[in-house]
Length: 236
Figure (cartoon, rainbow, N blue to C red):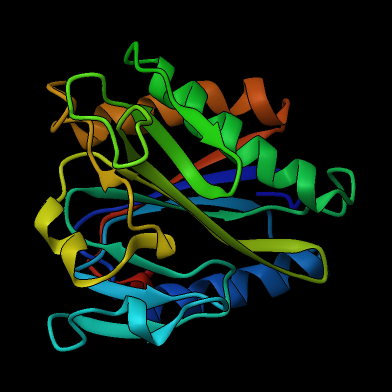
């Protein structure tokens, strides 16, 4: 497989977070060196919280609930766990235009396009990271605004213009697990998932939608497909 191809990888089971970070760091360095292709890696994690570079200690409201990992991605506290599709995005942003803001916009567009595959409208809101779903079925907020729930989080890091970390989409996680943090520091809005919204969507369905919408957002790249059936990223 040549270094100018894009590899897709799906890991079965639950991937430990430290192993995932180690794999991402190694792959990002190899992409930068030109010895490995870009990688989109689809995983699930055991229940855990991660703290981004802007995380505030007060937003970790239940520090003993799950293991907490400090991470150097942007953003605040996030939850990862079974039923959530985590998409680690190792792309050469330098070769794709040297535009970090545009790259983040593309990640947002990718999530929105993926949700649209299920006839669901995702929204980007100024001052609120991630992708949001309007909830006219819920009471309005205390400020009179329409209720909205977060369905996807975005947090990346770049090293020498190669990205890692990425996005997460709530397919069917245990939504109560988000209650141990203030997700992304936002208290006025809630969290939802595809299944919570009444959509009978599986993880495989989401994976197909992610692949189908990727090229529309990021452009055509030669692809090579890989699948990892191990339970730990260290086995990839």
